Length: 266
Image (cartoon, rainbow, N blue to C red; front, side, top):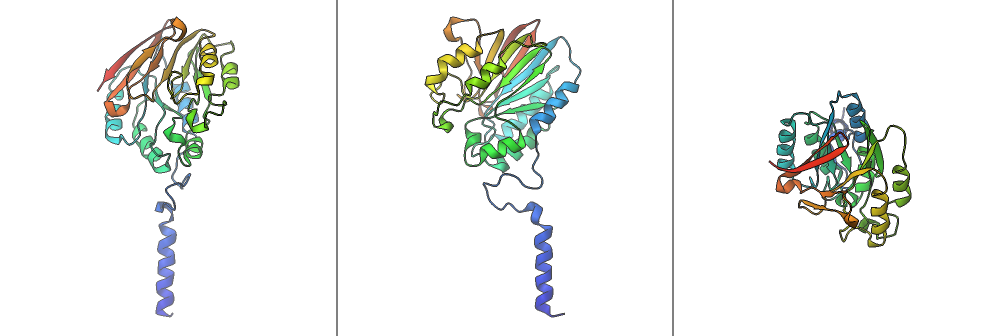
């Protein structure tokens, strides 16, 4: 066989063998090894876990580019007894890239408990929305755990050009309608309603929707500092967790219908 043809065949063989490791574009949505439907799978795992009388979970956010501190976070959580699940509350990535979300998932897969991903504003950059939907699932979703309904939703209004549709108040109102098996509610989103990245035209109706029923708390990240505020002077805490870069997270417990929280430094 002609030497040039042999060389050509060798190159073709090498290219096909390497296809799985080639990243064709930094904006690609998936590769052959990309995980799918992580929230669905982790919620199934959560439903199979034995639970005691206490719901104990972690609120953490803004893992963007903080891979070393994210690993330390996972190690810290794994040493806390009785944690049921972790809420990774947005800005999983910095640039909305597939590789970023894959790296973070690889780290958080080291948890001994399920983790749930919530959409952040940085996750919507470039093709980030498509990557998030494929890897984690819907931007707006909810789940019920031991009688408490966790309503996870998109509040990244700036990335929607403040078009009046983010957050989706129609969907939110449907989620907070009383239903069998639900005794209380917890709202979960990335951008809090008192932040400039939240659509100010929707904030009043949003807060009224969140506070309308037996809501224990509303949980956020985004601001890269710990904060707690009480809209309308009601006793419903709106809790913001610090960023992973500052090596802090919120440990939250619900016991007998009452919610308590504390900031943890690691």
